Image (cartoon, rainbow, N blue to C red; front, side, top):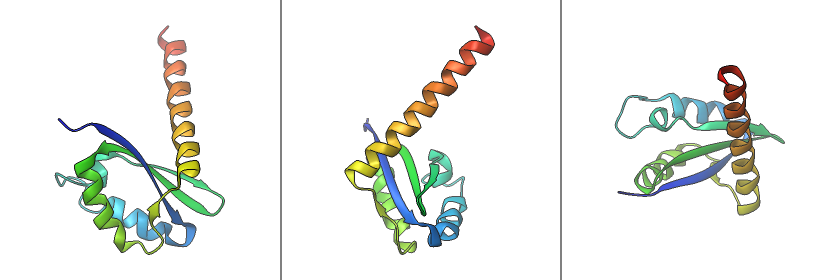
Length: 102
């Protein structure tokens, strides 16, 4: 069984539509962005796409993302910032459910 990896890609704001179209394409295919439900964050004129998946998915995704000219893996500092933000939001949401159903 492959381990789960967290990865962040960054795309220039001008390519947001291309990225959105790529994510929406063929959502029910065995390998698709729709199956891994990437989270998008817009900051400073860029779109960050956070994905949690296995290595096999990322090999597939790297090939598909070539269709978006500015798409690349985020640098370590950018990636760490986005991953922390996603985790913080997930923790906040989980805490909120505790208050509702507590």
